[in-house]
Length: 184
Length: 448
Image 1 (cartoon, each protein chain N blue to C red):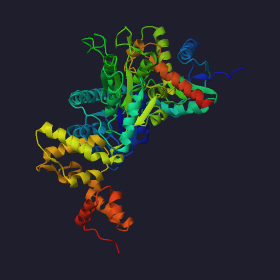
Image 2 (cartoon, rainbow over the protein chains, first blue to last red; image 1 turned 45 degrees about the vertical axis):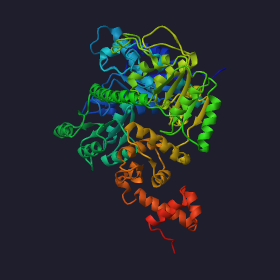
Image 3 (cartoon, rainbow over the protein chains, first blue to last red; image 1 turned 180 degrees about the horizontal axis):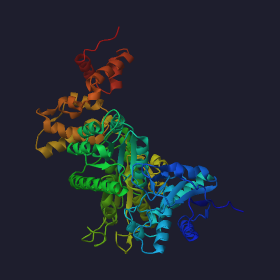
Image 4 (tube, one colour; image 1 turned 60 degrees about the horizontal axis):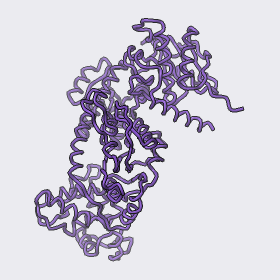
């Protein structure tokens, strides 16, 4: 029997609808071809709270997620409703450890200018795949339809597809191959 | 490779780290400095396209750093990072050449738009430079010159490899004549009747690269007013020379690999497949194996290009070719400037032989060109050569001028050989008369 395929962990901080988490899981499996499963790791983000800004600093959350997740998970994506920031910027939709293990996506600003609930599911799934892409060393892509495109505005998130462009697919394949070799 | 080089200067670790992380995800190459003093040290070693500088820092202020940076490199874009209370200083900084300022914490969109705006304006300047260089390239062509053993080896190699249709990778320092070697392979190959089409991958602005290589169909993008043939298409039946291949970005590496594997390509916005009927010769001054290890060059593309490889020797390893090359350039520039010069005097040749020529043949060519212009005598003299003039001695080297170094070096060699003139002259690669002249000039004496 061959070795079991490594898994990607989805770790919601607060309670999220199953429909949303299932959609995120399905899109992750489709984009990265690794099975995804759900396991909450953190339920209190007060350690990352900045009272002056009344926002949550995403970088320490990533460190906590990475430290709390069992080692056999290949990557971990946190999901939260709170508004995230990094010190130099006013806000972020999410953050990832570039080429690392953990990333996080915030739904806080993904409800802006929304016409239908379906749009929200798509946005969260797209941004989750985008952040996970960074953990596979993918950078922002200039192709506006690629899921790795950095969106300036929420309408850009709606405009981009749920897929990686052909370049990013090749680069992802390279990274997965490299990780496989490193793990041998 | 293709990415913008950004230096962040901020004394707050958390600000440096969060900004660097953000910019790295955009594919930029980022370095960080905790102070103005550290930034200046980093800038001594490498050049950056954009500096993001915190205006208020311990030690050297952002304003002082801006002034020092602009003195050395007026083209670098400096963006000041400022807190609310420091806006007046930022406005002051703009008067002193800062590109813009950002009030921290800044909106991610604001940062993105600003960086993009700077990259676009720098790309425009690079594009203008590229067009000028292209014109220069068309007006100059040299044949390969050299009698040294290392060059004879190069000639033998070219003779062997030219008749085949194999891909060739030429490595070597800048200015060693990699382009001439590529041209020589082409003119001795069965494809010699076909075109030799070169493309300098390092000189072409990234946004023009795809269309320059592959061509485009009318309407493929905003500026595509007409159909345009790319270099791949122009090279049909001939040789495609990819100079500075180490500089192309990841996307273009993927596209090129596909062309080399499938032997077909498409114009940008085109649907008609076109046959890639050309021989590929690539050249680089980079260590591609290191670039692969650093994750910036694709291993599969490297193996496609590295079928047969050879290295062009640096000029310092073929110094015996210097007189020949110098005379050749002299003839050409005398003709071009209509200034009949008889030759190069012995002392000037000796000086040339002693110099290390880090810029190789290109540097020698430029030195002779300048000497032809400034020369007031019938022959080029040592003082006409720019490399040995005092203005080329950097302030850091004050007290260690080339003349000081030369004097010390000759003294050292003489001591090593116990003042054996013939042996010393051989080691110094100059003749005995020149050595005697130098001993007189520097008043060298045997140590007690």
